[in-house]
Image 1 (cartoon, rainbow, N blue to C red):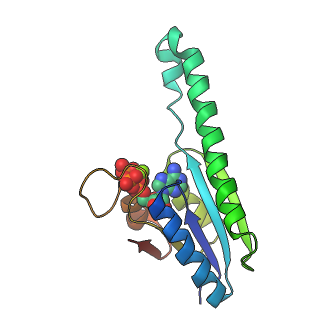
Image 2: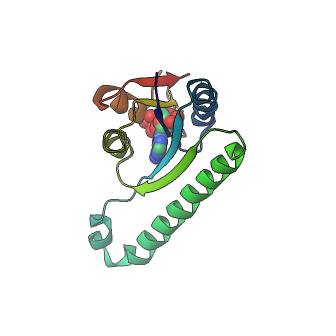
Image 3: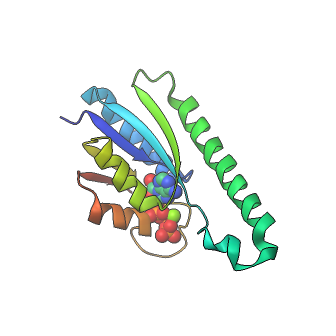
Amino acid sequence: MYKKVLVPLDGSIRANVAAEHAMELAKTMNAEVMFLHVIPALPPYVNSYSDRLGGAYQQINDELETTGREIMDKARKEYENSGVSLEVKVIWGNPAMEICRESKEGRFDLIIMGSRGLGEIKGYLMGSISNRVVRHASCPVLIVR
Ligand SMILES: Nc1ncnc2c1ncn2[C@@H]1O[C@H](COP(=O)(O)OP(=O)(O)OP(=O)(O)O)[C@@H](O)[C@H]1O
Ligand SMILES: [Mg+2]
């Protein structure tokens, strides 16, 4: 039924559980999967906010990129022999917006993601990103608890 599945990952345990669900489901549906990580870039104005921030701004963004790529390399390795067609993508931006944009532009027909992510400290059922994606995505969303 579903042929293209988008799986947003942030390196959290719940996102990894969602990836497991996605890969199992994709196998049974003969679907393609894309793992997507959105690097939550610091807003560009931070750079001009204070001269002293220049170096730190660059350093933080570099570190975010390195970490993001590590998360995705690990995820790719985990499933490279799964028999499912898997693509991995890393982009910069606002995570919820980019997840919705990618799902639309890439014509995905299902998004599978975790209910919570790295920020799991509050008692809410869903994090802010899963919340926004459920509300704004143009395709069905499967939230894995
Ligand atoms: N930067 C990201 N890139 C890709 N997917 C992400 C990203 N952040 C979160 N996700 C996806 O969204 C799911 C829910 O995470 P979310 O960030 O909404 O919860 P949280 O981290 O617990 O809460 P919050 O971020 O609001 O403090 C994750 O399991 C993952 O699938
Ligand atoms: Mg989060």
